[in-house]
Image 1 (cartoon, rainbow, N blue to C red):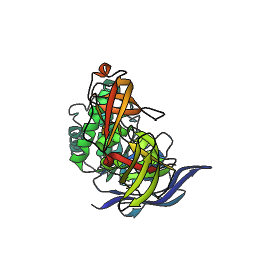
Image 2: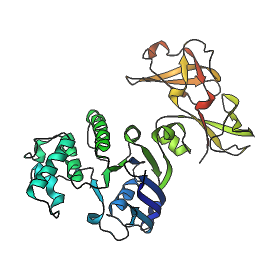
Image 3: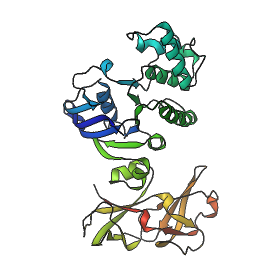
Image 4: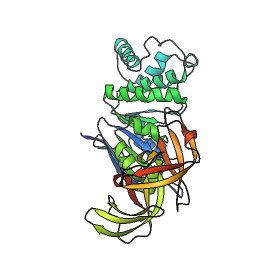
Length: 360
């Protein structure tokens, strides 16, 4: 793949606030790339820097190998879809979609063909004469996409475009948006604070916090191989267990985990020996739960189920383990949670599912 967006050590200050604090990243052509993080982390500011609505305090930003310093938004090979869609209520769908094409020297027929093409892409053929108050939230979102796509940008920027939709429609639009990106082959840069949204749609995800990139990875690696406590905690649910390290042996390191024991596990992040400032992260679904003794597993524990939460597709059990000050969260597809209430249970954990991290 070739690079379409390159950001080198970019800062953006608003007074004393560093909204973007030394960010460097590369986005490849044709990728679905997400900027993920909590509110105020700098992800929307970074998107606006790419769009040209903000200028960096320092650093360089290239799009399609061209330096964007001083290049106005309308002269960049980008287009943006805003969270509120910004559809004009006083003109119909066709004129809304055509709006950004006013300065393009296209014949009426060519313009009509472009409108038909993008309406077909977003599956809203025949909606040309409708007004925004005649459209549902999902339809308005698609019209905003069509208006951006008609200009055939090299990079489409999306600022939390699904945030105003209800959960069911948002889930449906995630699939449609991903299919649309594959169909048009345009690079998408997608801003969201929703972890599930970014993981389900993206080729790569950049997790941001306090203006800085914490990790850039594909969704699978981000979830199973977090680089620090913030990423591990922000992406999904996890159990953090205080630990300390001993001596290394090849790729492994001796780790003592409070309330569980002492083991040799893989040292993925090359954490130093004899370090008392570490934690181990274990995903709830990586822990096997049983009402009867378990024979297989690197770590076998006994516990008491203190509580449970039923979510339909799975149940989260809160298991008290001897010596632990807080329960382990264990996810299971079992739904008979009442049969476990207050009863002894057995847990199994494999070493490969334990991530050793430094405390921050």
